[in-house]
Image (cartoon, rainbow, N blue to C red; front, top):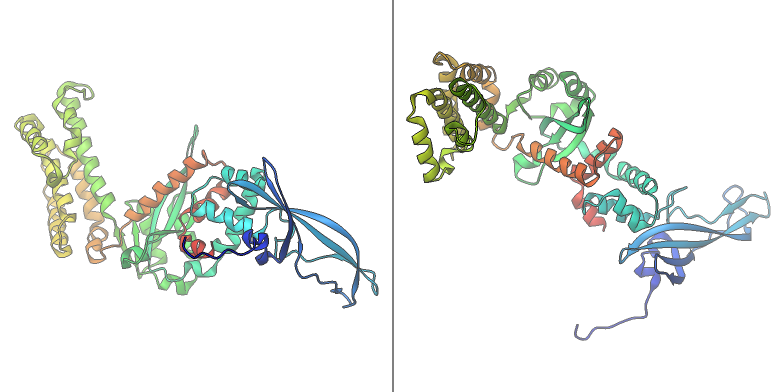
Length: 435
């Protein structure tokens, strides 16, 4: 650092106390924590009841957890005066509202550090509590309340939503069964190519009634602005969207369409395997050895994998598997077409063919054809609204799984929803601008 100019150390500015209305007057560095002694920068001895001037009565001490420095917990030891009004005899303390909210044990700077750590750095509440030197409950309650006030309750959070994504999510696994929530996601930035998906809300349960009730609770003007609703194959979401958003286009995303094909292929393979051997597949069985190759897109398969498929399909007993496999490959190929209009035409031809011409003895393919025919409009709508896919919603579900792993699971659904909104609600640019 050439020609650098150093000034006298300013502990107040370094620790961010000037923004809290405090001035540092001393410090103590211990092995476990650091303490900064400070007082109110601008005292206000005037009575808020009668306006008379108060006289100092005594001094009290308030301790606030502050932003850690070097991961050493830092405590603000604030000496602030109490005054007594000579006119009305009222007693009051110096105002510390700039330093911390009322009855809060963490300074505003400490809260901002904790919220940034939770949302941007993916820290656990335990790690945040350790950095602040407070208990887990104190850190959790303070951070969730600040996040709720500052970010989740922001009325602008729902503005500009044009594309909705909806999916189910398992938030807790129990011995009596999985517990679900319905996840509503904003996909507008993904479609426009300006950003990533962000979580709008999570509602307990998974059903048509859950999604319909949530939509019914939104403002009519907001609902009129929704152009597209991307979803999986669950008909409850489709019915709810059709009733509450009749003007919006419903899109069944490619992931779930291709998944329907892969499930039909796996079921056919398993049925043929049981019919031939009377048991499940084993490692030396031809069908079992090719189970991964069968669900690999042909354009991505290696020469060795293609050779294995050719050898497999030479056996006449595997013809049902080959027929369903060819349908699956055509589905994958349609979505990989560089031009949407070509992909739309190819998939429409496939749906028409599978829906009307299914050889006998292929119940899996018949079922697949019926599903594709019923959801034909939603499936083909994807090519008219490229980018309005529910894939980013699935990606958000993966991030929520990561969140559950960081926290070692959740038992409180309210905490889980709040943490999920902070984790995937698209608040990072705002938080980075505040840090």
